Picture 1 (cartoon, rainbow, N blue to C red):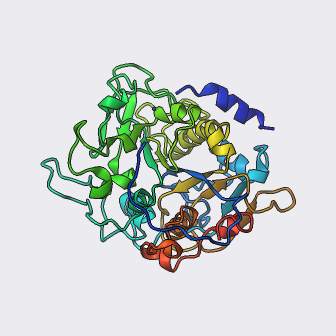
Picture 2: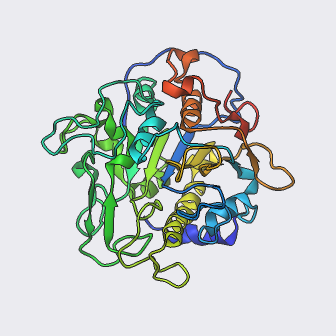
Amino acid sequence: MFHPKFQWAMCALALAGAVACGSFPVHADDRDDDHRVKKVFVIAMENHNWTQPSTQTSPNQIFQNPAAPFINSLVNRTSGISNQVAYANGYINAGQGIHPSEPNYIWAEAGTNFGVNNDDDPYHTDCTPDTVKTTNQHLSAFLTVARKSWKSYQEDTNVDATNTPLPASSWTVPLFSQNGVYAAPGGNAYNYSNQYNYASKHNPMVFFTDTNGGCNTSTSNPLRLHYAPLQQLALDLANNTVADYNWITPDQYNDQHSTLANGYGRYPNSPSTSDFANIAQGDNFLARIVPLIMATDAYQDHGLIVLWWDESEGGDDPSRALPFIIIFKNVHKNVNGMPYSNTIQYSHSSFLRTMQEIFDVDPRHGYTWLGGAETATDLSGLFYPGVIR
């Protein structure tokens, strides 16, 4: 049974596919089909460590932070779903110097940053390439070949001036970042402000020509239906039409990255513009989106939710661990009633290797390991034996 905060969140939220071609042969493996992951929902968050040295006070860590009651309820057994949660205490930055955000999103998709060390949009405004890549060596490209569907749900994209979602016939590929103010006050359903702030740097699929359709922001782009406004997620969940692999990015206010101009009104002593308020903004987002997903057939039928943070702050050493939490019916068995955790050193390469294994786009099925996934430890330690491999 859900904890009351989950029940409230499901009631509070009121929030819209792609067919692939060609396939490599699939071979039998040793995983337990009764426990295998069928659909994945990655929710991308920003710029905070899970734990950090006590001497570091900015930004604040997430673990045991009172500004993040929902996130911490997942790991301290007060959420009511402890038997469906596992988390990492040793998840570290993708690599030394892999900063700022964009290289880490690219890494989660391809196992390398391809030398990108900035937050530029994939193209310049004149459509000359900036950080876009022409390689097909990345996860969503592999999924397409394997006839697995994928979709990128991005907040503040494919909506009108009042934050009303556009019909699918009007969607475009959101190649360029955009920020500003909605025409209607309180246009954001999560933070109740009228600000918007979409960053393409947080949308990994747009950095590859085979999954962005080229520098084409019109409705003629053949890849546009892969990129949905965040509001579409609730409709797709209700209709059980979500993709096999779903990447979900809140805007830069709801992902804990940026401060609202007038502060966040749901933090004590609010409205606040402190880092605690930024953390609270993201915590509120997760407290509403996670139960929404969990209440659906897509989750109940072996769906996996991954709460993913992009990069460490203040240094890349193991003393600055990143938050990394999974929610799944077949996680590793709880220990004394507490959600399971370990200190195995994981990174975005571990995440990517695990996605390749889940979707059978690994060497056992005719594919190559992507970048750092080749030598990374997968995340199987967080799951019931046989779920991954």
